[in-house]
Length: 296
Image 1 (cartoon, rainbow, N blue to C red):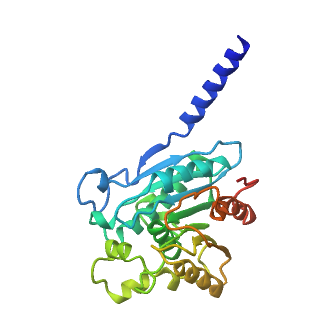
Image 2: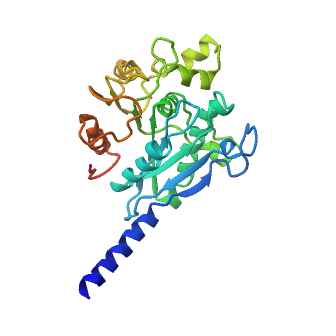
Image 3: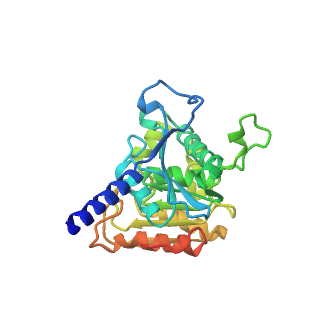
């Protein structure tokens, strides 16, 4: 009887844990989506909020941009699972379903969506127990391009804006890039992402503006970057060039290149050295005073 009771308690605990992992779904633009081409799911950007447990201390938060070549979103592998991992060491996570070039939303719409997401998170700081100076962004593949774009194309808000949200900063306090598309220059870009975001014949100035390795300056936030040497879809030079530009501008950060593994690995197989990026990343967040007591 005692064993049955203990099993019953364990099942309750497991069910409670599962329920806690259900995100809060929030429309990115509750007053109506600007530049919308329709009212279908693809036209309505969303936030999926995964809160970490509040223990009396304001939390770090991260906006997560899944990849998918600006044509679809790998939102489960590069979004929801990442959010749950961040929760495991006390970071609140917000997965962004942004609008896509493949659905007709060319630049600058995806950038506007991630800028809005960062402002929304800061506007919810009191309600969500978030430290406004500890709000970062993470992105994978094309989502890494979006994350690196907001890291290099941000503003501190317009103090005269009628919309209170637009008075808030959209600068991320830290950046995490997983096998990111960074450049739009033909030598090393992911051509599908470039076409989806910029169209068939983009202006040369726009290509340079969104080649984010060329946009880094001393005010760019610190970044943690990881990639594989064997990535056949997004060349490792994307990460190398971004990190090299960071060093040249005096921006701190870390770059980790793993020999084995292709593209779009997410967490990756446990048997690979690539799998260790999670622990390394959480330690980095601890080292830059974004989290306390990071774990694997």
